[in-house]
Picture 1 (cartoon, rainbow, N blue to C red):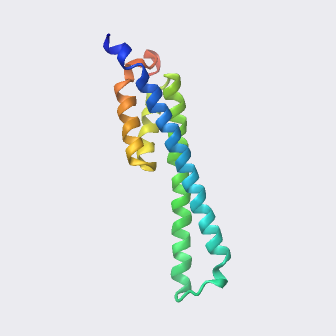
Picture 2 (spheres, helix red, strand yellow):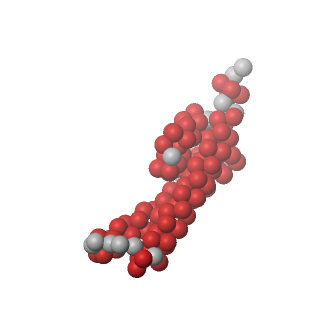
Length: 127
């Protein structure tokens, strides 16, 4: 069995891990946004000692929610390219962003994408 045939599954596995991790990141970001919205809308019903600190905390949570969406979307895009075995650079970027969403699945996706680089179209190995 040649090295090429033994690594044919790696881009697909990396791509699936990228997509799953990206979708879970989007779900987590959406859950964070819902929590922020609920806290913000019930602000008057919550006993708050320092309203300015509470407002600052909510602002930080909103920023964290927004930041979560970007790597999740890039991870999904990279996963699609990995499954198609096109645009290795995007697949690699998706794997790196997957690490930001979930360390374990992101690292596995990165390993599979890097080890399966030879499976990608030769003319499209660059970003």
